[in-house]
Amino acid sequence: MALLLLLPFSAAGCTSETAKPTAAPAGFCGEAEPLKLGEGENLTVQQRLEILRKLDKPAPDSVKKDLATLIHWFDHRDGDEKEASEASQRVGRFIESACGLNLGGIH
Image (cartoon, rainbow, N blue to C red; front, side, top):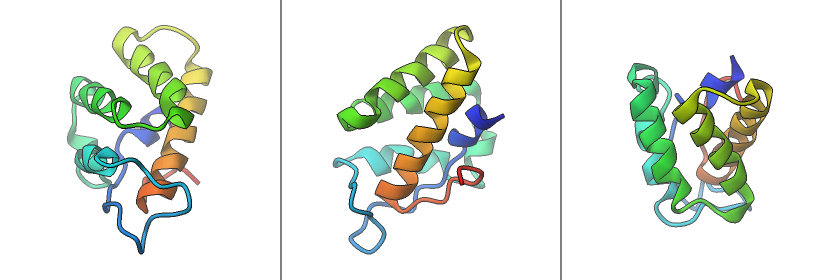
């Protein structure tokens, strides 16, 4: 399920070498660190939801709506799963691009 692909993503950190033209705001990549590939798979749904909420604070406006969609879906487990999956992919692509991440399964 693509929705779960976003959640166990990898955060290598935002450095000038890894950041792409769309850079993440200060603190964004650090909040994603617990979700990195190889570690994020061990997080509970509640832990992932908490991290998504933390990512929402420093997130740029371009991904806020998608983060809100994901937070709502994980918080309530209702709504359009396809919409949540697509939001997951968009947020995942942003994180990979802005933070130089390998989220696994996003491409």
